[in-house]
Amino acid sequence: MSKPKILIQLDSDAQASVFDAVVAVDAPVDQLLRHANVQISQVRDLVYGAMFTRGVDDLRHTAVFIGGSEVAAGEAILAQVRRTFFGPMRVSVMLDSNGANTTAAAAVVSAARHGSLQGATAVVLGATGPVGSRVVRLLALEGARVKVASRSRPRAEAVCQAVAARVPGAQLTPIETTSSGHTAAALEGAQVVIGAGAPGIELVSAAVRANSKSLKVAIDLSAVPPVGLAGIEVVDKAVERDGMICYGAIGVGGMKMKIHKAAIRQLFEGADQVLDAEEIYRIGQHLGG
Image (cartoon, rainbow, N blue to C red; front, side, top):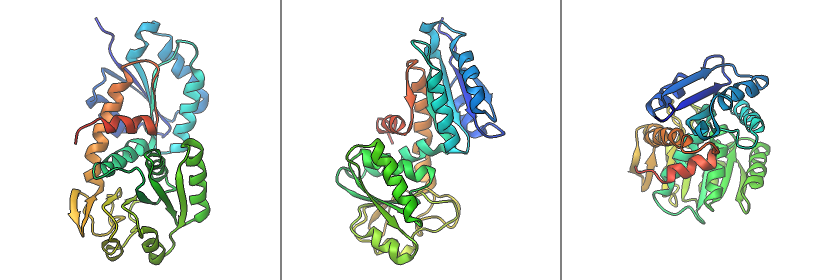
């Protein structure tokens, strides 16, 4: 008889995410062990508990999911989890703090369905946040020319440097967008725009978006009014508006959920998988609409 699938949820917040727990149950896993307020000093013993309770051949039935609202904390936990492994003693692990990896993957998968991203010009607004910086990474991975837009040029430059270090040959341009005019200029000649700013902040007016005639795909990841890309409805899913294909946050959300569940299922296909943004994106590429 096969061992039950156990997912160990390591969450950096005071309360472990209910959202992530529900998705895990629906994935489904057989047993979910939730740990909140996880500190780096605790990670080793938590992972030892996952590794030393089953034989090497059965470790593929145990996996770790890293969540929480702070992406930097999640990245630090992931690094510590990986340092804990040795030899064949390891389990698969997935990072999706703040939903950043699955959301970014869903956005780029959605954009790619309407034309190749290789050589396309894409603008990422709110590119310095946890989701936006991952969208930049995935677009660069696909060979797009990415305009990395932020109200702070130094922060945009920092994202460009970080992504260039991970993606050889990345074509990145930092853009400061402190006015409507700056944003309109950034959109000139672009085929794709993805809004990944903070909730409740309009990044592009309806007029600027509609007048950006080169745009073929516009994706807004904010569900809180006012939305980031004005004139796009949160439920839009491949809806044509002003000559471009539009997605709202809920329209992208269905793909995000499919990717999240598929990634959890993949964790149990082997004990040696590390699912970060790029790996999660590849999973999304193989899913249907």
